Structures are given as C-alpha cells and as structure tokens.
Image: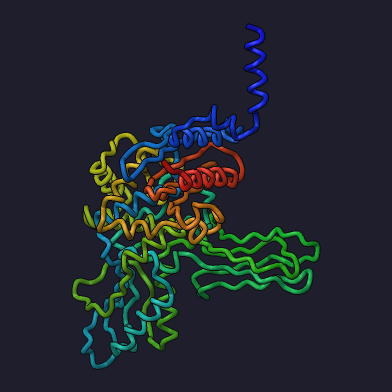
Length: 484
C-alpha cells in the first residue's frame, strides 16, 4: 500500500508543470475550461472586498455560458445608458428628429423689417446643439428680412419639466461637465470650455480662454506660474454660491501643457438666450428688449427649424458616454408617451414598460436617472442580458444600437482597451464608471464566430478602477478566444 502511494506521488511529481499533467487533470469540456478560467481570474485577492456580478449568454443558442451573482442588485454606472438608448429606439424610432425652432411675432411679409413683438426659441431636448448651429439659425432670421426686434428674446422650455439635475447626484459633482444641467434648450452641452495656457515666467498669471466668449459668465483668475514643476491648478465655478463665475486658482508650472476643462453653467436656457442675443448683435440685428423664459405665442410664425437626427445623437451618447444626452433623451421619451412636460419619471415608466416586454420584472430593479450618474440605481447582470438579447433580435433597430457602442481598441470609452488581443475590434460594449463602480456590457464573437452577449458589474472597491478594467479586458479576451 505504501509503495502504491509512493508511485502516485512520483507520477504527480513527474507530470507537475508540464502539458501532459494539464491534459490529464484539466477539464476536457471547452465550456468547463472557460468557466474554470473565469473562476481563476476572479479568485484574485482584488475581489475579496468587491462585489462582482457576471452573466454570459450565447445569442445563437440562448445557452448560459457563465454566471455569477447574475441576480444581484448592483450599481450600473453608465451601463444605464443601454436602457435609455434601447428604449429610445423602441419608442421614438431610429428616424426620430430632435428640433430647435425660432419663431417671430411678425409675419415674413413685414415691410419695415421690424418684429413688432418677440423672437422665440423653442427647444425639444437636442443635446448636440451648438453655437455654430445657433449662428446659422440667426442667419435664417436675418435672411427673413428682420433687422430689429422691438420686444424680447424669449426661450420656451415647456417641453421638459423643471427638474434640471438627476436624483441622487452628488453635490460635489458640480461644476464638472459630466454633471451638466439638462434643458430642452441646450447649447454646447450646457458648458463653458475653459483653456488655461501656461505663461513663460514664474509669478505671472496664466492665460485663460473661455469658449464661447460670452458675458453670461465672469472670470476670476488668481492662478500664477511657478518654476518648481508643481501643478496645483484648479478650474471651477462658484457653484456653492449659485454663481456663473469661473474661477482659476493655484499654480501651474512654466511650460506646462494647456489645461482644458468643461465647466457647467446654471440656468442653461438663459445661457442659450444670452448667446443668441450676442449673435444677433454680431449679425447687426437690433434687440430692443431683454431675455426671458416664456411660451411661444400661439400667433407667432415659425422662421426656422434645426434638425438633429436620432442616429448621430445615439452614437455620440454611447460612444463617449455623454450624461446630458442620456438625461435629455429620457425626458424626450417621457414627453413622447405622456405628453409635455417630459419628465425623468415618465421616461422611466416607459423604460419599465419596454423592459417588461423583454421579460424583466419592473419591481425587481431601481432606476432614477438615464445616465447612471446616481448611486441610487440598482440593476442586475441578468437584466442587462435580457435587454441586450432583446435588442439583438430587433433587426430593424439593432444595427444602429450596435454601431453606437464603443469598439475595443478603436473608439469611444474603449479606444485604449483590449489592444493586441482577440477582443480588439471584436468587442462592442458600453462601459460604466462612478466612484467604486466599474461595469461593462455588450457583445463579442467567439473564435467560432458565435455571437455572445455579456454583462460584468463590479462595485465596492477603493481607488483606481484600472485593475478592474484589466480584469474585464481579460474576461472579454477569454470570450473572444472561446471555441467549442
């Protein structure tokens, strides 16, 4: 008996560390190997304090290839945008158009070129509208023969309700661009771009450039240059005081690269109207009145409509994970189904109705915004798999949905991930990141060209999300390499 045990021990010693040992003792079923490899990666001590939920499903057969905590409620971060964009396509349709319109209280036949009343701008939630398009709109007013407006410049924001920020958003998310206030009259992502250009001598102030240049904000620049190489520059806004005052403080090394920040503005509809007023002046159209927020007069004449197609909006939304676009889209969805004003709650009701059609129990998850910025949101990997699977089978919509997702190693929030692996240019997925949360969900093709959908949700960690990105990329590469 002792000799037999010795023989077994010698055999184990002989085969340990070589491929023969692995072929004898490793699971022979490819799916078992796949699962074991995932379990091995997730056994890292990195995940001792962290919660992880995963589900991977074959879109060809419906087979579950792997799942762990798939029904655990976790924070989705920007994976929430998959719900908003999927519901937007399902309810508004891929041919939907966002509008921004300009009206006048005077007909185009007015012979004295004067608007005897107001000029109106009405917004319908276009998140991509910018100053160039505003200039084109003012040019259309000029081309209509209008040279003077006796009344006011009026913004109509009746398409949305007056909740301009997400439920559960953190107070200190202000004043950074990812937490812009939503409005049906949106322009320049409701932000100011602030560029700080280093000076050439210690003690001098850096140059600060605001784009667009506008009187809507003021600037306080107390920053100085230093030759110590230390950078304590801070670009902000007096958000605690509810002021549109941009502040540039601290020190910046001589010769440092430009610091470029997007800073939010309060009351974005007034920002829009101020930029419109300034553009009227540039184009030599006189405004006698002031700016205000009100409804378009029922007798006003439509002068011009700017159109933003759904396809380009959704691609930008998902590729760069734009929060403002998601919030405006969710309210637009609400307005389309429940009437004006569009609200987040009405939008969420529509999302739940769509998901119920995909087999999701709407009482088993919590959604409070469209972008995933809020830590209140709680969803499961299983929910995302049901959504992604259902969208895959919406053949008239899936091409656009799929095209909107970042591509590994190519663009969007995945542009620098999974490069040099079989997942590069293969994985199309939405990422998500808020403090202590990292998620990714989307699609990948295996080595057999079998389409898979997956959801990976990780939360409750401290510090950088880079190690969790690395693990997610490894898991995605395993999926891409899987073959039966």
